Length: 321
Image (cartoon, rainbow, N blue to C red; front, side):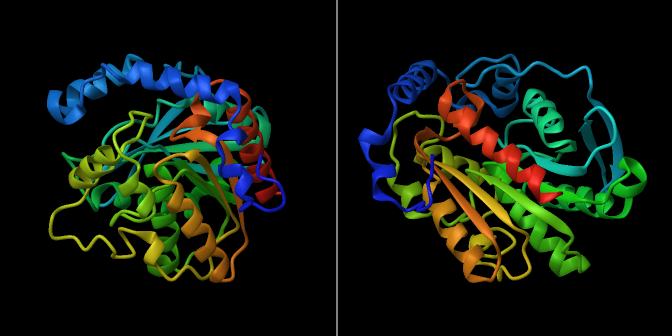
């Protein structure tokens, strides 16, 4: 979908969007138009509705292959959900789920992690990090850091391999970048071999595309980004602190990264800007742009999601080769 020149202007035109993708976007907008706002009905009620598959996202069945363990975090226990391939894994994928730091859970994307386990040969370890607004920053990042520290020390004994990759979607992409920076700066660890950063949010002070997206309910609107940010970040926090907005960090000694983003995503600037800064810091990075892809598009059926997921699987597989 992205070709040799990811900045080909044709990728951003209306003509580049397939009829199938346009139809999927229309269905998403229709499914969300009557959906209540989580800040109106309460986050607990909204989480329950989402867990039942209400709203735009397809309900993800729970994997019978999954197992859960608990590790020590910073003053708390952190649950890890593990889905492994048959036989010996080729590596370990530390996965961090999305949901605006407010929604989602480690058990809500089992089919995706099964796919990665089987296609890339990775043991997938998804973090059940604490959610805002009950547990605002730095609780979530602290839990993800604890998971990364545990894997750096225990992956070989637990999975038979210490080939580590990291990644996530949306807020999970943000937390993956924050975790990489914390591991480098706090623990002197730069052993992750790849970063799968899928429509991540990297600037909590809001990029132009975040501000300009408007009110169209195509998964993520400007007001959603604002409300998620308010829930996650206490008012006194500097939104351009690198631990909050990794776009503003010194990005040296980062692993090769794949940035995946759709052109109908409010977070498109985040991936465009972060990809450029990643490379400018001397790291390897790929940018995959998908015409018409909405925020979260890889969760919906269709050729666009299939292409993106295939590229993600190949990236992760090659990262541990």
